[in-house]
Image (tube, rainbow over the protein chains, first blue to last red):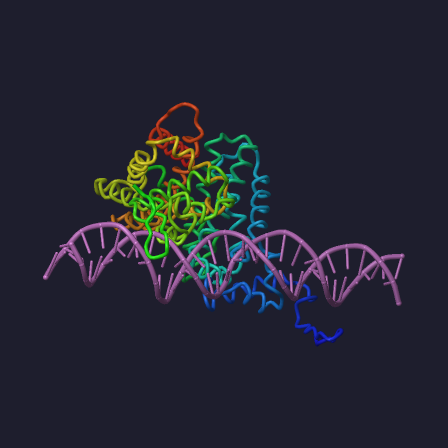
Length: 203
Length: 203
DNA sequence: TGTCGTGATGTCACTCGATGACATCACCGT
DNA sequence: ACGGTGATGTCATCGAGTGACATCACGACA
């Protein structure tokens, strides 16, 4: 299917990629596997591109930088999270609304623990990747806070609830990927949120 | 004081810097002012170095990268924060312990609001700088959580309390730098923490 | 007072991430 | 068969960051 073609005195090698669809997905897979094999810093964008059958230049057409290839699915997450927030009945307390959002997020992320572990391994091994993850969560938090405000929640309460949800998610997610049993992420998140309520009550 | 010196057929310009002490501080000041004037991306490390009277290579001997020049004081902060944590009496609840830490941090950061505003302006204007700020806060949080565990606080409670303290700090700090009156950062932090307690109680 | 060691800095060369400008190619409709 | 279009490749360039080595001021010491 992909052979070689001569044109003039130049021979083009049609090594899958230039016209094969799905370059973005191939790049994502190539990146994750290479980051896992060699580590993030030891992997060059050219390596990822080569494994995906494209050029480094093409990599940067799909992803703004070398880190983003692991994180661009956060836009989906944010979209669904906001939708979940819109779904809660008016008058729900800020923390309950946020609980509903966390439940939705848990369903999205909690499906494939093996994948989550691979990603977590890679991300935790590198400071730049941890930074990127944090800012993704934070911008999600900011979006949630905005939406909460639109729903009539007070300014500070909205910010606090949103930030708190991130805190809970981080703690719960960490427990989930570390856990040896196969407890649901959803359950762990619920537990963690309850725990926070207890803590804040001073008990 | 710093003139020129001829040695052999080479003339060295002793433009303050090569031997003048305090290169680190000069670099910090130069960076902040340039980031403020032109923006972070439009400022090159060579520019900062030049204003500080050194070479770009020297910049990287003081700071690991272009961002770190704004954040290396976090090591002080972490040190003092942990010391504050050690100062709380045994048996204090996780959240109360964290409250004490926040108070200490507030005293350190809350002294110069003008400086804080400048920094905040620069940091908020650039995604890479926001990332760096987040990871600094997060590693502070991790250090606090560790210390809380050493003090006998349960695993999850320790993580949650530490993460929560970051959430409270972020919300409070944002209010403080934005505020038009001259309310103390300490007070705002106390208020915000109280607000979180109320929120979590479901009221 | 001259010499030497040391720490801080400068110089140079290089790699790699990232971007703009332009060329090339497959594919699709006409 | 032809021309337009979108995706990709190619090339040149900038700037961050790093290693190796040279240079210099200064303080110790004879």
